[in-house]
Amino acid sequence: MSRTILILNGPNLNLLGTREPEIYGAATLDDVEAECTALAGDLGLAVDFRQTNHEGDLVTWIQKARGTAAGIVINPAAYTHTSVAILDALSTYEGPVVEVHISNIHRREAFRHHSFVSSRADGVIAGCGTHGYLLALRQVAHLLG
Ligand code: DHK
Image (cartoon, rainbow, N blue to C red; front, side, top):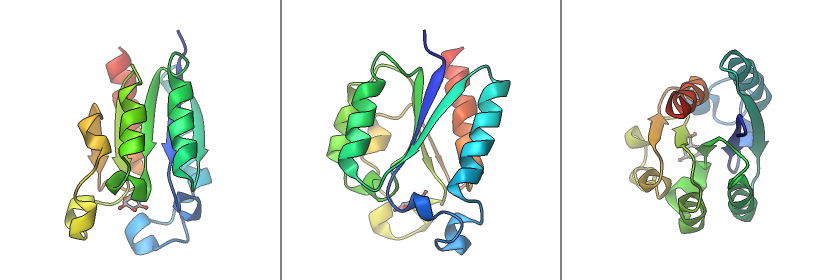
């Protein structure tokens, strides 16, 4: 059984560190990947960390995770609020899924309050900054036992 956790990041998260730092913080996506890789090592896991600005990439990567990845951590970014395709792809995936939002989407504009992904996610973390990725990774490890 694979011990690799797929960590997926949606649009504009490549700009982390420079993009609205008052909302998303100062850490870059490379910083987040390094922290996740280090924690995964401590947990006896590996990570496959990816970012894309394209919805279809996320759908394809989730499909390919079936039978290969032990769990998924996903920050779908803006696709959180729009993508039935990502929800449908996650619904075909058999392992644990934890959804992450860096910001507290419930304290922001009304259009960010609904997540299509949450109806499939086993857990949701929002408003914990980029530390939320580490919390999500720990939760996936916990769910894997
Ligand atoms: C990131 C985005 O890019 C937004 O579109 C979401 C999410 C919130 C985050 O908090 O990580 O609304």
